[in-house]
Length: 168
Image (tube, rainbow, N blue to C red):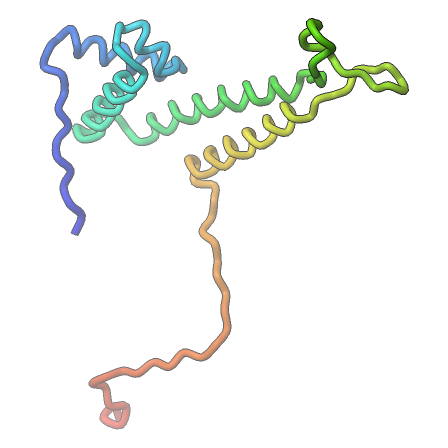
């Protein structure tokens, strides 16, 4: 039997309640927890995160916010992250190194052709991030189907308390 969750405590102070409402609104528009904390004069991103989580839990407890709405907000956020990763893929990344004494960072060139060398690390990192974002989107959207496991072997079933001869 599932256990009942303890009701979430909401802020009693009307000013604090307004700040939490604004935090939820900002988050739904894509603001980071750091931006929310700064805008609402909270001490840290953790305070902003916890305030939003309390509000979301209380809203769900009250049945006022549908799961589909929460999913849509998260999907929008994941789409923004996906676009940022795609922007990294679209850019040209040049390899850098350190020059001689006092010259600082330099762009590396091919000694034969003199052309700038490409740095594949940012591109590969963006691909990796896109895969993770795509996996999260698939899970959130329910696109991942259950894995079917097949096997072979013998299964013995013993039915206790049933006499097949008594059936005739």
